[in-house]
Image (cartoon, rainbow, N blue to C red):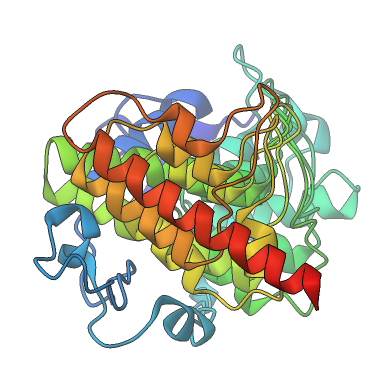
Length: 391
């Protein structure tokens, strides 16, 4: 029987296989090792993703929580995101592919599909290790017998493993061979969920380059009721929180990568109005609840047909302004509330407990300022409403 390590050793010649591919060896371990390695690899030559844009004059001092460290200069986030393109995947070296085909041509399909003690097939392992030529040669055989989407023990197809392993070239190959781009694993995660969760912007660029040839379910829900855009926003929130509490090049890069994923998902057609199944939160709710001001600013700067309508959507009765008001009463919270009010948030809206945002402000240094701000805007909003009603 041909196993993964045997085929690898033959193609590597005199190179010892175990030293060339040290443990881990299972797909689960390989993916975990890959993610850890990717976090420590700096990305060069890429533009920054977070765009703070133009901030309101009440905060001219530009504190760190505005996200200037990751800015794009004079460009707005929406202008940058509209220019983002897919990627060009290089061809395989013909000799490498022919050698790989020769290596597996006499192997039976039963052997190729047989899983090891962990349920991983040879294709899943090749894909996880980034062995492009071998992966393609085996995938061709799988395709002949309609087994290209065969799943391993966690329900991942080879394409899902390729995405999770951040192997954009193999992702491209499998898609061109006809892999199902909407297949999901045991958690309901599609390739878009996985890419958004782990900030795999290179993989999403491959999807961008093939979007006219594939029909992605951009609004697919995982078993937590989240769309890929929700997952990407949660990932950016985590990266932003990490960068604010313990700044490091790794967390800064992850913050940039996850926002690039958000931009790409939006360009693929993701909707900011989609609400998660469990709590009815939109991406605006998620970003506001995390106090992620750069992301909130970016999302609000995008073109929306009805920005006030988006901002005032409710999640179990609470608007984004309710959530912002409930944050610790800091200068950053005051700015966030100003940002929402400026964009059309209604301070007179009540939640299921009949509370307005001002009722949720906790005690603290800026509590009175925030309450006054909300009260003043509430009066203005009420006056505008009465004026409109009298016409």
